[in-house]
Image 1 (tube, rainbow, N blue to C red):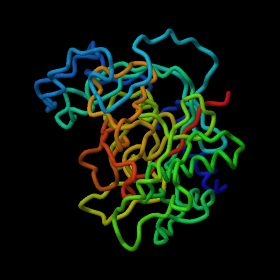
Image 2: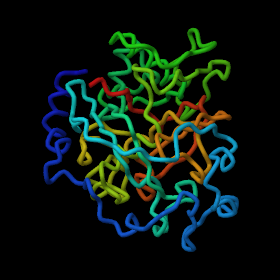
Image 3: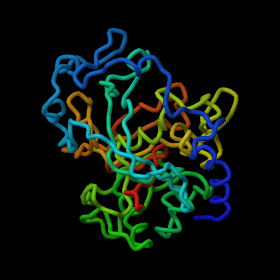
Length: 354
């Protein structure tokens, strides 16, 4: 990592990562909806638009894949009792945030008019293992230092988040990053020789990678680099808060407004981080997660949930710089796993090495 950038991250994020005041967000949260006793099978609020098929199956708590046949869910339904094993939330020297196990309210606020049906039901989810997640999105400079080239040669801002990368491209990068640090690879790439990370030809805003190039994830016990699960991403992005955002919108992320001409993403780490030290969880780019995309969380596991997709869609989280009006930490959508676009990127994660 660039030493100047690392010094900047330490100076700006360490007080927040250690829970000091003035960083935005809250470890406890205060929104009234979070105090409601939500059940895994009760997503419906009369004021929220929820697809009819979700409402029809709202009382289904098990099995998970009855609720969403496109997923093979892994995880459990009975949260264990978490013990204090000495884990501390901290910014590590490599620019990753160590995140400790815990329980949080996952999903959209059912009383918020902007909440989409795919963010429901809101439910208590438990993360049982510590993990590390990158404080910022992977940058063009980081990608080039690992892969050796840029997906889009026109992207000459090396501190800006890398884009025009598919889920397979991200897996390739994460494997190479694991190689560089002597860690096991977490992905097996199949039929991908010479065709990963090539970006899009010409000035296209998006394109599709070769569909013959696929990957298999080796499992959550892998010690190398991987994408965060949706649950890990939202847990870290919320950082103890139940609010839609961790601070005033235009102080926490790079967004287009009527008063500026931000037509592209900007340098990472320029805005206020959340209470645990993560930057740009809204704004800049929407981010890929490890999960395949599930249309609904009805019946989804409550402990370490992970959707293993039965289709070609990857879950993406947060909003990019052009969709400030929809900014909220619970926002989610699908993208084809072959798609390379100018508005989606990712941040790396790995199991904690304590």
